[in-house]
Image 1 (cartoon, one colour):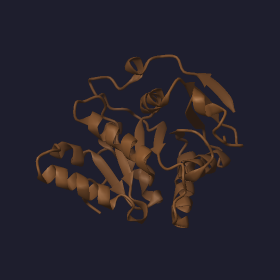
Image 2: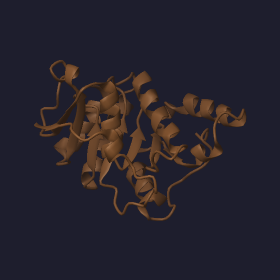
Image 3: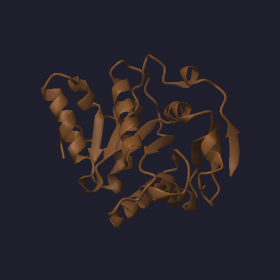
Length: 220
């Protein structure tokens, strides 16, 4: 495990305001649970995604540790020869069980810095099933698209219909006038791990056309 000090500020490294297209999907940030949930299929799907990320030569950015769906995806990517980067607050470094596989560790001062660093390092984001922390990370990335803080693709992995209630809530926010329709058009949704990388690579942000499926945010 290599430790990389956190240095440059988020403001200096975030997406430029002109929203220029990128040529490649080089780094993918995953948001997901530090728990595995009750459905064993979720662990298998997280592992499938980790292998797909590594196979595509994409760097995996995540919040650190070897537990839950986060650990399953990261461990699978590392075991498949992928480049894995864990972003961990200082107070969690000694108490968080880390991957045994080779990976890079970025130490940051606190939880806010962790989110900001992951956002800055990634070219795209995927939300796998998770709890309150995953909901927070997902909501922040989606919200930042509206004031043009970034134009990076965001994909919701609705495995086992985990996010269907949240997607329905977003649909309600649209219908009642509390969410801009453009947000829903910018979010990708799939329910299979095999579709995630092709969908993101087809996003307009990478100059590859609009091959990814889009639609209402409450699409299930």
